Length: 169
Image (cartoon, rainbow, N blue to C red; front, side, top):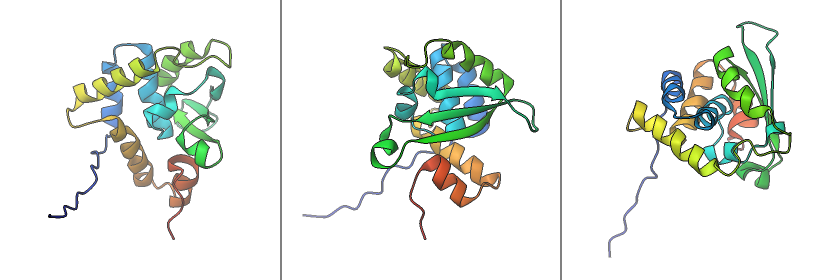
Protein backbone atom coordinates (compact mmCIF):
# COMPACT_ATOMS: atom_id res chain seq x y z
CA UNK A 1 0.00 0.00 0.00
CA UNK A 2 1.43 3.35 -1.02
CA UNK A 3 1.78 6.14 1.50
CA UNK A 4 0.74 9.51 0.21
CA UNK A 5 2.03 12.66 1.76
CA UNK A 6 -0.54 15.35 1.19
CA UNK A 7 0.29 18.97 1.70
CA UNK A 8 -2.32 20.86 3.71
CA UNK A 9 -4.50 23.22 1.71
CA UNK A 10 -3.17 26.75 2.06
CA UNK A 11 -5.66 29.44 1.04
CA UNK A 12 -4.54 32.29 -1.16
CA UNK A 13 -4.16 35.54 0.74
CA UNK A 14 -6.75 38.26 0.26
CA UNK A 15 -5.55 41.81 -0.30
CA UNK A 16 -7.02 44.93 1.27
CA UNK A 17 -8.67 45.71 -2.07
CA UNK A 18 -10.34 42.27 -1.95
CA UNK A 19 -11.64 42.96 1.56
CA UNK A 20 -12.98 46.37 0.51
CA UNK A 21 -14.68 44.87 -2.55
CA UNK A 22 -16.13 41.98 -0.52
CA UNK A 23 -17.57 44.41 2.06
CA UNK A 24 -19.18 46.35 -0.80
CA UNK A 25 -20.53 43.10 -2.32
CA UNK A 26 -21.85 41.66 0.95
CA UNK A 27 -25.66 41.50 0.94
CA UNK A 28 -26.34 42.89 4.41
CA UNK A 29 -24.91 44.71 7.40
CA UNK A 30 -24.02 41.56 9.34
CA UNK A 31 -22.02 40.00 6.50
CA UNK A 32 -20.25 43.34 6.01
CA UNK A 33 -19.46 43.49 9.74
CA UNK A 34 -18.14 39.91 9.66
CA UNK A 35 -15.69 40.82 6.89
CA UNK A 36 -14.64 44.11 8.50
CA UNK A 37 -13.98 42.59 11.91
CA UNK A 38 -12.19 39.56 10.42
CA UNK A 39 -9.87 41.79 8.35
CA UNK A 40 -9.12 44.40 11.02
CA UNK A 41 -8.47 41.87 13.79
CA UNK A 42 -7.15 38.96 11.65
CA UNK A 43 -9.72 36.77 13.38
CA UNK A 44 -11.41 33.66 12.06
CA UNK A 45 -15.04 34.08 10.99
CA UNK A 46 -16.06 31.63 13.71
CA UNK A 47 -14.35 33.77 16.37
CA UNK A 48 -16.01 36.94 15.08
CA UNK A 49 -19.39 35.18 15.10
CA UNK A 50 -19.11 34.65 18.86
CA UNK A 51 -18.63 38.33 19.71
CA UNK A 52 -21.10 40.22 21.87
CA UNK A 53 -21.90 43.91 21.38
CA UNK A 54 -19.89 44.86 24.47
CA UNK A 55 -16.80 43.14 23.07
CA UNK A 56 -16.41 45.80 20.37
CA UNK A 57 -15.58 49.43 21.19
CA UNK A 58 -15.10 52.16 18.59
CA UNK A 59 -13.55 55.53 19.45
CA UNK A 60 -12.12 58.44 17.49
CA UNK A 61 -8.49 57.95 16.46
CA UNK A 62 -6.15 60.49 18.01
CA UNK A 63 -3.36 60.07 15.48
CA UNK A 64 -3.13 60.10 11.70
CA UNK A 65 -4.59 58.79 9.48
CA UNK A 66 -8.07 60.07 10.30
CA UNK A 67 -10.46 57.33 11.27
CA UNK A 68 -11.36 55.32 14.32
CA UNK A 69 -9.72 52.92 16.74
CA UNK A 70 -11.54 49.68 17.37
CA UNK A 71 -10.94 47.43 20.36
CA UNK A 72 -12.26 43.90 20.05
CA UNK A 73 -12.16 41.61 23.09
CA UNK A 74 -12.08 37.95 22.12
CA UNK A 75 -13.30 35.94 25.11
CA UNK A 76 -15.21 33.00 23.62
CA UNK A 77 -13.13 31.76 20.73
CA UNK A 78 -10.76 28.96 19.79
CA UNK A 79 -7.57 30.56 21.12
CA UNK A 80 -9.18 31.73 24.37
CA UNK A 81 -9.85 28.08 25.25
CA UNK A 82 -6.16 27.24 24.92
CA UNK A 83 -4.65 30.56 26.00
CA UNK A 84 -5.99 33.67 27.64
CA UNK A 85 -8.71 35.85 26.16
CA UNK A 86 -7.19 38.84 24.39
CA UNK A 87 -8.06 42.23 22.95
CA UNK A 88 -7.10 43.40 19.46
CA UNK A 89 -6.63 47.10 18.85
CA UNK A 90 -6.89 48.17 15.23
CA UNK A 91 -7.69 51.12 12.99
CA UNK A 92 -10.97 51.56 11.07
CA UNK A 93 -11.91 53.89 8.26
CA UNK A 94 -14.91 56.15 8.84
CA UNK A 95 -16.86 54.07 6.29
CA UNK A 96 -16.19 50.80 8.08
CA UNK A 97 -16.93 52.32 11.49
CA UNK A 98 -20.30 53.48 10.11
CA UNK A 99 -21.11 49.88 9.13
CA UNK A 100 -20.33 48.54 12.61
CA UNK A 101 -21.96 51.22 14.77
CA UNK A 102 -25.63 50.28 14.17
CA UNK A 103 -24.91 46.69 15.22
CA UNK A 104 -23.39 47.86 18.52
CA UNK A 105 -26.48 49.74 19.71
CA UNK A 106 -27.90 46.81 21.66
CA UNK A 107 -27.11 45.75 25.22
CA UNK A 108 -23.43 44.85 25.77
CA UNK A 109 -24.24 41.19 26.49
CA UNK A 110 -26.28 40.84 23.28
CA UNK A 111 -24.70 38.70 20.55
CA UNK A 112 -23.35 40.80 17.70
CA UNK A 113 -24.72 38.19 15.28
CA UNK A 114 -27.87 36.93 17.00
CA UNK A 115 -29.41 33.77 15.54
CA UNK A 116 -27.68 34.38 12.25
CA UNK A 117 -23.95 33.86 12.82
CA UNK A 118 -23.98 30.94 10.36
CA UNK A 119 -25.81 33.02 7.76
CA UNK A 120 -23.47 36.00 8.23
CA UNK A 121 -20.45 33.71 7.90
CA UNK A 122 -21.87 32.08 4.76
CA UNK A 123 -22.77 35.42 3.17
CA UNK A 124 -19.35 36.88 4.00
CA UNK A 125 -17.65 33.88 2.36
CA UNK A 126 -19.93 34.23 -0.69
CA UNK A 127 -19.02 37.94 -0.96
CA UNK A 128 -15.34 36.97 -1.01
CA UNK A 129 -15.99 34.41 -3.77
CA UNK A 130 -17.87 37.06 -5.76
CA UNK A 131 -14.70 39.18 -5.72
CA UNK A 132 -12.39 36.28 -6.55
CA UNK A 133 -13.56 32.65 -6.81
CA UNK A 134 -10.27 31.48 -5.27
CA UNK A 135 -10.85 33.39 -2.02
CA UNK A 136 -12.26 31.62 1.03
CA UNK A 137 -12.90 32.57 4.64
CA UNK A 138 -9.32 31.77 5.67
CA UNK A 139 -8.02 34.10 2.94
CA UNK A 140 -9.05 37.12 5.00
CA UNK A 141 -6.99 36.11 8.04
CA UNK A 142 -3.99 35.11 5.94
CA UNK A 143 -4.11 38.30 3.88
CA UNK A 144 -4.57 40.60 6.86
CA UNK A 145 -1.59 39.04 8.66
CA UNK A 146 0.55 39.34 5.53
CA UNK A 147 -0.53 42.96 5.06
CA UNK A 148 0.51 43.75 8.64
CA UNK A 149 3.92 42.17 8.06
CA UNK A 150 4.34 44.06 4.77
CA UNK A 151 3.56 47.33 6.59
CA UNK A 152 6.40 46.63 9.01
CA UNK A 153 4.55 45.26 12.04
CA UNK A 154 6.96 43.31 14.21
CA UNK A 155 6.83 39.54 14.37
CA UNK A 156 6.27 39.78 18.13
CA UNK A 157 3.29 42.14 17.71
CA UNK A 158 1.70 39.94 15.07
CA UNK A 159 2.14 36.79 17.18
CA UNK A 160 1.12 38.23 20.54
CA UNK A 161 -1.76 40.50 19.52
CA UNK A 162 -3.17 39.15 16.30
CA UNK A 163 -2.34 35.63 15.12
CA UNK A 164 -2.07 34.36 18.73
CA UNK A 165 0.42 31.75 17.56
CA UNK A 166 3.24 30.88 19.89
CA UNK A 167 6.50 32.48 18.86
CA UNK A 168 8.86 30.36 16.80
CA UNK A 169 12.44 30.77 18.04
